[in-house]
Length: 329
Image (cartoon, rainbow, N blue to C red; front, side, top):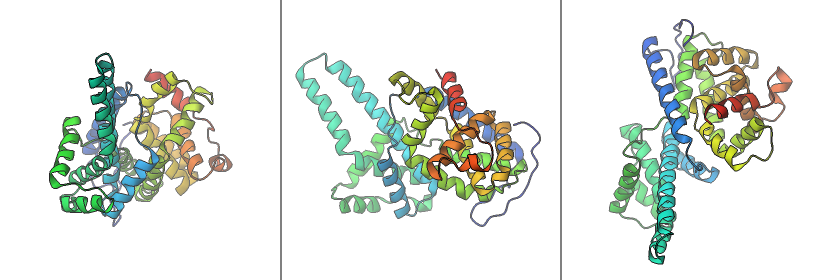
């Protein structure tokens, strides 16, 4: 973090910023940044994403029905994403080996794929239940609640199958399910902004950030596809360019600064440049990159011309994502 941190208390009945010691915040931010950097590196070899709109919407609606915190929704989506990617990679690896062998093993591979499809809803619900256990213990989703929900959808499962489902997810992810989420990055940066004297109250930004984060999750592919096309200055990216861009999609710090900057523009566009300056100082991400990402988010939420009508805003994500893509190539 550049510059001294100036403590400022922000009062809010629902969410409170500015009550943690600056040293603790600095250490937590550094740890989060290191985790993000590692996640970006590990994502470079992935072949796809499963944050599809229908899946995300299902998780969000289910979490809302069960009165879970917003953090649970994002955590569940990330657990499900990692789990499905891991399972898909395992199936592809087995297919590569078994296709060279006899027909029986090919049939076994097909059976594994069908099993993944047939148990997808069960695994999705288990991800929500696991995420609830990482949040608040008094809001853990019980097995009875899960089984009743599945029965209402026409799925007959037992408690044993539910436990096996959770165990399958835990083993596949090596029991590493307490994953960082974009919300954690957003809230950490808002905490620092509050101390650094941001003119827009952190609590005010927080509510808008949650709305925009939901939007980015629900429109994940369209938003990132537009960023990719802008970064390469071409409307038809090649497969190789798309694969290299995957690591950009996993950069939660980049997403967080874009979310906060877009929220600041909505709340008070006159303070937008100041907020971007603070975010650049805190994260080291170029102001052009932050501005371009926020513009992309605003374009998909409130219209293509909104920022440009109010004040100068870069109208392309080229600089933002070209830098990020070349760094991870």
